[in-house]
Length: 80
Image (cartoon, rainbow, N blue to C red; front, top):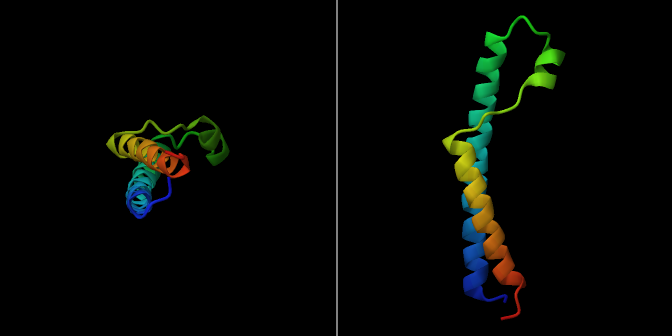
């Protein structure tokens, strides 16, 4: 249900998610750079095809905050 409280909650969750997503992006970019330096025997194309982010606390926090945002948005869509 769209109420002022639910709107405020959703805005807060969205801001929290954006903060966590930016931190996760920085962590993944940093990890990618260090992995690329260690694997200089590959071409950039080979590295791009093979590299997958491992993740860590930042990506876990991003995943959790995305679920919290999803729940908050679901409350906006509900009719109860």
